[in-house]
Image (cartoon, rainbow, N blue to C red; front, side):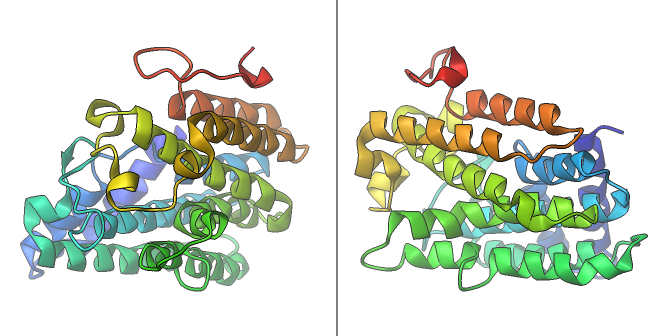
Amino acid sequence: MAMLQRIERVLEASLVGAEAKGSPPKLGQAMRHAVFPGGARIRPQLCMAVALACGDDDPSLSESYGAALELMHCASLVHDDLPCFDDADLRRGQPSVHKAYGERLAVLAGDALIVLAFRTLVGCKPKHLERLPDLTAMLDQSVGPPFGIVAGQAWECESHAVLADYQRAKTGSLFTAATAGGAAAAGMDPLAWKTLGDCLGEAYQVADDIRDVVGDVSLLGKPAGQDQTHDRPSAATLLGLDGAVALFDRLMQQAIESIPACHGAAKLRGLVMQESQRLVPTEGPHKVERRSSLYS
């Protein structure tokens, strides 16, 4: 079964479990609205690709951990779109959860998805139960303080934020958890894969900053110009568009070079290159001029 199919299957099973008879129907509907249809699912795909490169001797564990990361990501998007943060009407090309179900249910749905993420991980039936505590800790660290997603959101509440600290928490934490956790789920050293996650996480946030400047709703599936509107830290603002693109290319190059020697290295490099083109395209209506040798 393909990676995306495995991810969707686990996500669907998790949502069905949260929609039991007797529970508030609108809460389940709001949670499902936040998760389906999905975006690129790059975090769980990256996690499972690393696990496969490391042998993936416990598929139930790697796919459950990957799905848990995606649920955390979806929860963060629900909260990010709330009126108290971005006040965004659209997400993934459809009404954001608070626009479709109201602000109160959006807060509850985001909170419920965080709980569901942990439930999805600890409720799986792995062959190697001894790996579960470390993965649970990684999931915890990727979301909570001092350096998880919640810290990234909190930086937006400060009068001044260091761009690198903001990016590491807001976006980087889940990518580092994806690569390190994919290795740990397969019984390999997570530290060997941390640099890949660090570089990709920072690159994704830089790409988001670039797309916020050059993109539009049709490309983003959400409103553009949000960084300027909300006076948020942005690589495009700090470095200029050309500087941000150069930084993105350097980070993607570093990510590729950091992939440890393994039988799945070539496939992983291909996935990184594919994502680089998707995020900051060199062709099409939203193309961006690139000078990196990656694209020559």
